[in-house]
Length: 334
Ligand code: ASN
Ligand code: ZN
Image 1: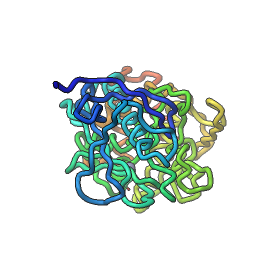
Image 2: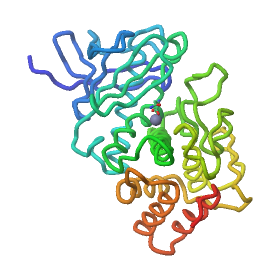
Image 3: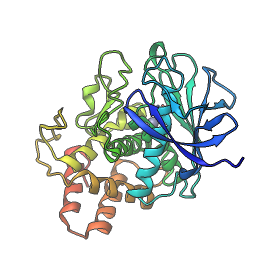
Image 4: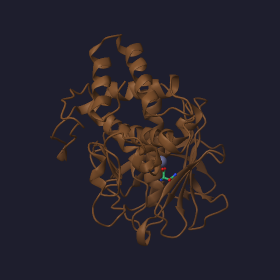
């Protein structure tokens, strides 16, 4: 019989009960989303090589919301791929990673207690470990958006993954990961300026990263640009651009949003007035896809985002002035 699209229901670990698009098969249903480029989700069965096994299910009811059920991580990953696809299509008018309609494969249960997730250009895949004790899979929505966005950066600016361009590459993934979470508007995983806050990856309740004041991670993320910031690990030099993005969206100073407290002091005590995350996202995307190159550094990112803001909102607009003020707030100046 012909394979046709169906809609299953899944109990995720981080996003509550969600719909998952599936395709009928000899086994009942396969976890393949024909509406979004054939996006599929495979079980890596705790291996670190091979291609994995496509998830299938007899009744189209998936997972139970706990990591003890093998399908639960697949539900989160499939939901993350779908919501990220929709964000790029609806908000940024981009048809997949390469803007060609092709979807990546999501791979879950990679390795044993593997505490990371990653994008791979060659195989066009997003891969998720199960975290400590195989209980904290890295499949939260913002992490899905982060990894997918590495593919987008690779297909556009191609920011080199070292030095300041590496920090910009990492921040781009955090910025769009956060934007995916806001755009999904899921009551169980409301929008915030934290990355991976529901995973408890370190076992101390802290998120992976904070955009309002990156140094809150206590791991060495930079809040402000300084000479030598490019010598940091790219996940820490990203702090400068993450902080820029928060300042541009929300402005400087303390503020509570959806019950989360944010700080965000500027380097010199200056005040930044935010322009809202929707405009900040559009400016970053326009800069990434129009002005950033493989070697763009923080100085170049300032210039690229100023041009992008002028293109979108006009030379001398309030948005252009906010971009300038937000970069000054993180010590990136003309
Ligand atoms: N989870 C990490 C990231 O996407 C993996 C890495 O270090 N490349 O940045
Ligand atoms: Zn990354």
